[in-house]
Length: 116
Image (cartoon, rainbow, N blue to C red):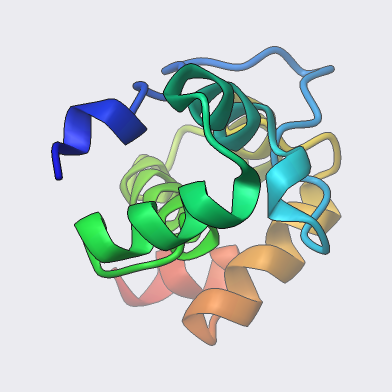
């Protein structure tokens, strides 16, 4: 199975109004996943199964890992505010971003910065 059939690159920059990662309850409403699934031309169940088989992780796990990787690298820059990082990653609210980061790392963005 070819990975390229299920992958479209994430946009590197999102506008502050982009709600890409707000809806955690239904990952298939995420614009990246929806566009990729439509590009592949398969039902969401088939897409999810094939994506998981090809990458060894679900689409949601992939997006979370990608966001955490970007967030961690951006947080290393002490001149960037957490609110700016949240907006750059597509979160409408810095508090939602902080909860997301804490849930996935065990540390708040500020705590993460202090130990780096």
